[in-house]
Image (cartoon, rainbow over all chains, first blue to last red):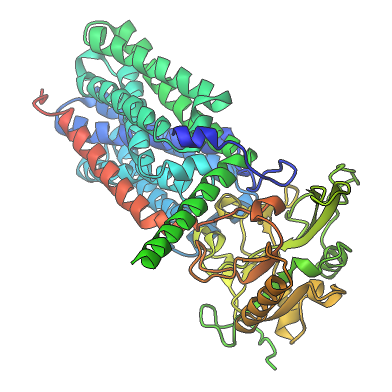
Length: 314
Length: 275
């Protein structure tokens, strides 16, 4: 770390960025990732509720999942330069493209979540509806986590540098959001699992975010400073505040459940926007590209010299 | 000589030797003929109203969806010689272009298959397929490819795919008056570049170095590589770019672990809670 701090001087071409700033709109893509997390965790709660006799939680979670994934898909299509060509996403299946994989994951998850919600509302085909609900929970786990790979598999310094921890940040964030919203919507007597999911999710999200921010990469500056830093700090305040509230009073008070649940969900949304903005900021300043790459080159050069020196000595 | 057949060429199986650019910046005179020839041949729109940047003779500033060759101008201060005299200025000029990477991140992450590897070993966007998702823009470690906002799709250098198909060289190389931009078979260009660096070193130009030539580099070598007279970052090039998909297997494993953990956690919150 300290060595890095000293080496902030670097060369650039008139201070111009090397990378192109992501073309994505925050509302579309950070919103898409947040809504996908809400949908995925809601489907998991719905599946648990359908097997443990919690009809009110089940219905609310299934409707939340369907609403969230619809919003999510709309945001994704809206962000395309050519929305009418959305179906070109399904021309190929490419494991090297997280966006291609994500399109397929969504096209499995979306209908399952939709069918289980439809069955729940209409009362038709209850057994098939429950099976779809279980399928939505399992495929939902991919919806919640693939988005971390989507961001990390870019040249954007903040996102790529976080690739080891980001899936866990996003998994925690999804659990916090889905759990929080279900806690706010469901009657207190049925909301126990949702509340536990919200509290555990907020905890995981916070701990993993701190690990991400303190990984030692120069790019983590963007998670601690500027717009990204503000959003990340706000996120923690909402997540921790909401989680403490839910843990202390959620089982007794409907009001605490609503306020606490929504606070935790807001913390999750703020985190997605924070990570998004931090990534964008890291493409605007060439130092996040030049300094680490120059250090890597210099270290390799030093190692080569040392190896050559040892050979000469021997 | 090969003439491109109608229909799809054999994608993924190069039918001929890989083609490339060797841009020797020690020969560049900053005339921008390459920029103009590229714009003309490819019918690229203007970049907007003319603005003067005050950055030497460079008012183009960057590669973009509408600029596929960009000439950089650097006025480098040369300290006064020890024997006396005054401080001077040295010109560095370089024509930047898409690197047509061996391991191309834009191509890897493209979800529609619009980006593909041609029979010449170059990387090209099929404009009738691109849906403007913008993923390639964030994936490129060189910041080359970009979206045209009014059009929505992504654009970049095609190495004049239409010209190569009929055995012509790309417009920029054709227009270059000093052979700073050389087009040809990549293997031959690499040999030529090695010889040129050796020659310059012999002449005492110790700062000459090749950029993007090494097939062991982070992107597996560039199809368009350079001879530079200073550090890459001086020209606005990343010093040691790595294709982002190199870490993708690790990312998928991490995501799978997180997904499994999430499902297990969801089961645990219901544990012993059957009503």
